[in-house]
Image 1 (tube, chains in turn cyan, purple):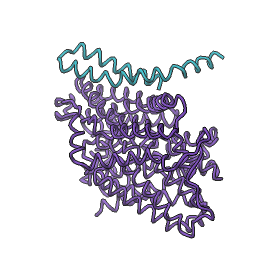
Image 2 (cartoon, chains in turn cyan, brown):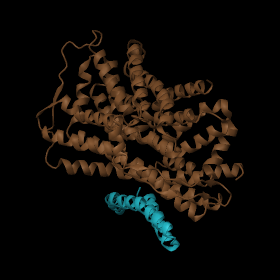
Image 3 (tube, one colour):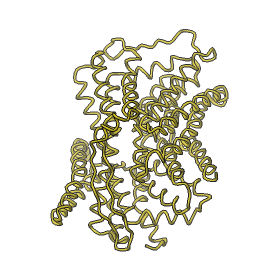
Image 4 (cartoon, chains in turn red, yellow):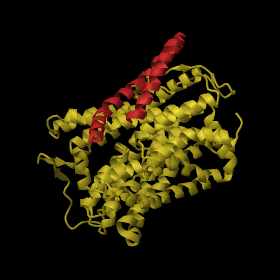
Amino acid sequence: MDTKKAKSRMAKLRYPLQSTALIIALLAPFALYWALSLGNPPLAVVFFILMVLSLALTAFAG
Amino acid sequence: MQLTLLNWLLAFSPVIIVLIFMLGLHWGGSKAGALSWFVALLVAVLRFGAGPQLVAYSQVKAVLLTLDVLYIIWTALLLYHIANEAGAVEIIGKALPALTPDRTMQGLLLGWLFASFLQGMGGFGVPVAVAAPLLVGLGFSPVNAVIMACIGHGWAVNFGSMATSFQTLMAVTNLPGELLAPDSAILLGFSSFFCGAVVAFIAGGWKGLRHNLLAVLFLSAVMALTQYLLVTNGLWTVGATGAAMVGLLAAFGLTRLPYYRPAQPPVLTSTGPDGKPRSLLVALSAYAVLVVLAFSLNLIPPVSAFLDKIYFTLQFPELSTALGWVTPAESGRKLYLLGHPGAILLYASVIAYLIYRRAGYYQKGSLSRILSRVGKGAVNSSLGIVAMVGMAVLMSHSGMTNILAEGFSRSFGARLYPLVSPLLGALGAFITGSNNNSNVLFAGLQMRTAELLKLSVPLILAAQTAGGSLGSVMAPAKVIVGCSTVGLGDNESAVMGRILIYGLVPVLAVAVLAVILAWR
């Protein structure tokens, strides 16, 4: 019963999670490019981590 | 980096991961793509000497390539749902079989020509989802209906969906469409005959095939020639659409012959869900608008020059791995905001929506339903493309693709490789469910292998994308879509076994032709 509930909750969450992952995956690389152009490695690391997180979210909710 | 078995296997590991998880564990493309991206990242950094700068810039390049493809996917789906919500797709599908009582020709009209037309306009599983139930309605068995709808449109995938897969081929290889289009059109045009012949065989057995062989030959020649002329004149976005439309018109002409003609003239109107009459001509208007726009915006130089003025790109520095693999400094993919095929689809979508709305074909809330279906249909596949393009660009920038290509070139040699090339493309599409993803995965590898073996790069890339086009229709993902629409939800294996046998016919035909062309 609990497994069914969890599956149904996941199905509801899937689309918003995927949409969030897609938006981050498409925007983070541009922010990363901007940070690299500024010569700001810490900021670049932040945006790279965001990009990696979006792919982790894709692996989870894809 | 030296070519050793370990290095080759490590370079191949992201692709193997996609294969295992999609085929063995039935994961979706986005999930498996994301996992393989992490594997590619680990291998690139730990074994191939990719540094943080290389990884970061390669992913920015990848997202530019991704946007180039997503622009088309989203707007192609928008146009399809605008037409579908108006009932246009159903009207066209019902009108076609009324043209003739000949069963094999009915199968060809729906399973080959109409499915190819739908692939040109929508793609992404739409041809199977729409044509298979219509074939069942005509009395074909559900298994046969799915196989006919799948195999029938295999030749139209590469230049279908506004040539998304071909656009990816150009983006990944950085080669112009003018160079890649002729060979691709020849191989795919040739395969259209085999796709039609397989559909005729399934629809009417040997007798049906024999009786309709001349018709299949004539229609495939018409479509192959139309597609060749369109794509070699820069109109690859409407290559399959235009060819299938001309094929449908030619078939309409054929059904006027005494052999095919019905006793009663066909009725070219239908009723919508609201009971109001709907015209076939108005139903076709969305696609007519698209063709007119694509032709006029591409063929009138001042217009195309004006639209191509606004574009977006980024500059990238030279990138190298610790082991010495160098990617020269270059501009990223240019994204033409107004003149892009995706923009043309957007203009066509807006005009088509206004036409259908004025004709009273929409019910309350239709716009929100259209937008919601586009979003739900596109998000998951978009994520798959993001992940797989990211992985492929990382592989090429870290020298992994080069190691793979060296391995293939040493194993097969120049004489045999053209035979292997379409099979590799088909395998990639079978695994990932998409010609597009197959091109992302293997186009760089095929290009590098062709260079190493001194083979014609456009021919090998044409074999790759033709194999991908024909292989994508056998993919479990598409078969599942087809099965779910004809009530075969739990019996996909009955279709899979037969579809692999029939689907290999056009792939092998392309492989043989590629060998002959390579030996010219």
